[in-house]
Length: 183
Image (tube, rainbow, N blue to C red; front, top):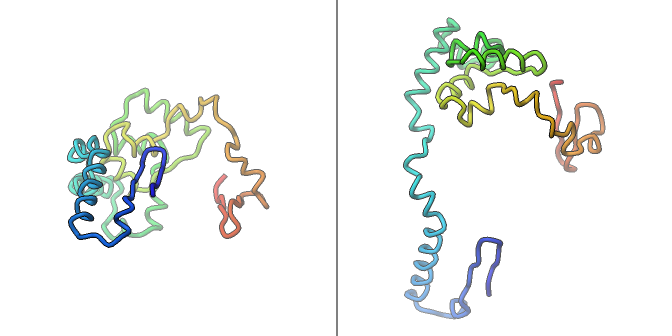
């Protein structure tokens, strides 16, 4: 018997379904482990270089402290979701207090802000500050001129207008829906 997928074939020796001694099963398990290890060898070679949240605890604490200082806030404020919403970073001037921006970046962010609304909570700003400039968190958070110059996109790439029973509501499945609470 075999299970096949595009990148994976698992052979189940027929004799394993019969009574067999533990050494046969153990040998098959060891061979399978070696096969799987081989498939992830590139990851294993790089995994120690991949940062995790545990590696950034001190950086996050420093970023959080800087944000609290700039906004004149307390630890109690930080834990208050209403404070987080009231103190969103939503313009390049405020953003520049927390991350270094080139003149070109400031200009582009200001330009994007004229047509797209964006904002970062102080909590998320701390995560951006821990990321390298133009890293993955930065790219998901800081507005880019590419967002307003993309000419290849579609206004409705998932044909949501066909699954919308009312404005601002999208239905994909019988038991759930998406409610768009912003523009």
